Image (tube, helix red, strand yellow):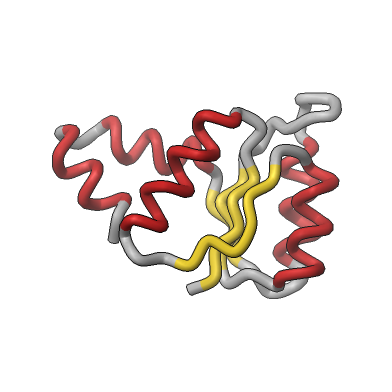
Length: 101
Protein backbone atom coordinates (compact mmCIF):
# COMPACT_ATOMS: atom_id res chain seq x y z
CA UNK A 1 0.00 0.00 0.00
CA UNK A 2 1.38 3.40 -1.03
CA UNK A 3 0.86 5.91 1.80
CA UNK A 4 1.16 9.70 1.91
CA UNK A 5 1.49 11.55 5.25
CA UNK A 6 0.24 15.16 5.52
CA UNK A 7 0.89 16.66 8.97
CA UNK A 8 2.28 20.11 9.83
CA UNK A 9 3.93 18.95 13.08
CA UNK A 10 7.37 17.73 12.03
CA UNK A 11 7.70 15.46 15.06
CA UNK A 12 4.29 13.84 14.59
CA UNK A 13 4.85 13.48 10.84
CA UNK A 14 8.20 11.77 11.45
CA UNK A 15 6.68 9.51 14.13
CA UNK A 16 3.79 8.37 11.93
CA UNK A 17 6.18 7.80 9.04
CA UNK A 18 8.55 5.79 11.24
CA UNK A 19 5.75 3.60 12.61
CA UNK A 20 4.46 2.83 9.13
CA UNK A 21 7.89 2.20 7.61
CA UNK A 22 8.90 -0.03 10.53
CA UNK A 23 5.70 -2.01 9.90
CA UNK A 24 6.77 -2.57 6.30
CA UNK A 25 4.48 0.02 4.70
CA UNK A 26 5.53 2.08 1.68
CA UNK A 27 5.43 5.77 2.68
CA UNK A 28 5.83 7.50 -0.66
CA UNK A 29 5.75 11.11 0.57
CA UNK A 30 5.29 13.24 3.67
CA UNK A 31 4.29 16.89 3.49
CA UNK A 32 3.71 19.72 5.94
CA UNK A 33 1.04 21.88 4.31
CA UNK A 34 -2.15 21.69 2.26
CA UNK A 35 -0.48 22.84 -0.96
CA UNK A 36 2.12 20.11 -0.62
CA UNK A 37 -0.66 17.60 0.00
CA UNK A 38 -2.46 18.40 -3.24
CA UNK A 39 0.82 18.39 -5.21
CA UNK A 40 1.95 15.08 -3.66
CA UNK A 41 -1.40 13.40 -4.37
CA UNK A 42 -1.26 14.50 -7.99
CA UNK A 43 2.35 13.38 -8.35
CA UNK A 44 2.29 10.07 -6.43
CA UNK A 45 -1.36 8.89 -6.54
CA UNK A 46 -1.27 7.21 -3.10
CA UNK A 47 -3.58 4.40 -2.00
CA UNK A 48 -3.98 6.01 1.44
CA UNK A 49 -3.37 9.52 2.80
CA UNK A 50 -3.01 10.23 6.53
CA UNK A 51 -4.16 13.87 6.66
CA UNK A 52 -4.14 16.51 9.39
CA UNK A 53 -7.36 18.53 9.26
CA UNK A 54 -5.85 21.86 10.37
CA UNK A 55 -2.84 22.65 8.25
CA UNK A 56 -0.89 25.74 7.21
CA UNK A 57 -1.06 28.29 5.79
CA UNK A 58 -4.22 29.33 7.68
CA UNK A 59 -4.47 26.49 10.24
CA UNK A 60 -8.22 26.40 9.75
CA UNK A 61 -9.55 23.59 7.59
CA UNK A 62 -6.98 23.63 4.77
CA UNK A 63 -6.12 19.98 5.34
CA UNK A 64 -9.77 19.04 5.15
CA UNK A 65 -10.28 21.01 1.94
CA UNK A 66 -7.09 19.59 0.44
CA UNK A 67 -8.23 16.13 1.50
CA UNK A 68 -11.38 16.52 -0.56
CA UNK A 69 -9.17 17.25 -3.58
CA UNK A 70 -7.05 14.22 -2.71
CA UNK A 71 -9.99 11.85 -2.43
CA UNK A 72 -11.17 12.75 -5.92
CA UNK A 73 -8.02 11.02 -7.17
CA UNK A 74 -9.20 7.75 -5.64
CA UNK A 75 -7.03 7.90 -2.50
CA UNK A 76 -8.46 7.17 0.94
CA UNK A 77 -7.70 9.72 3.66
CA UNK A 78 -7.43 9.14 7.42
CA UNK A 79 -6.95 12.04 9.86
CA UNK A 80 -4.03 11.49 12.30
CA UNK A 81 -6.34 12.46 15.18
CA UNK A 82 -8.40 9.32 14.48
CA UNK A 83 -5.22 7.25 14.82
CA UNK A 84 -4.27 8.98 18.09
CA UNK A 85 -7.79 8.58 19.50
CA UNK A 86 -7.83 4.87 18.73
CA UNK A 87 -4.35 4.37 20.15
CA UNK A 88 -5.16 6.33 23.32
CA UNK A 89 -8.03 3.99 24.15
CA UNK A 90 -5.69 0.99 24.20
CA UNK A 91 -2.64 0.11 26.26
CA UNK A 92 0.63 1.52 24.88
CA UNK A 93 1.79 -1.91 23.70
CA UNK A 94 -1.41 -2.83 21.86
CA UNK A 95 -1.68 0.69 20.42
CA UNK A 96 1.77 0.40 18.86
CA UNK A 97 0.90 -3.03 17.46
CA UNK A 98 -2.39 -1.77 15.98
CA UNK A 99 -0.64 1.20 14.31
CA UNK A 100 2.03 -1.03 12.84
CA UNK A 101 -0.41 -3.38 11.09
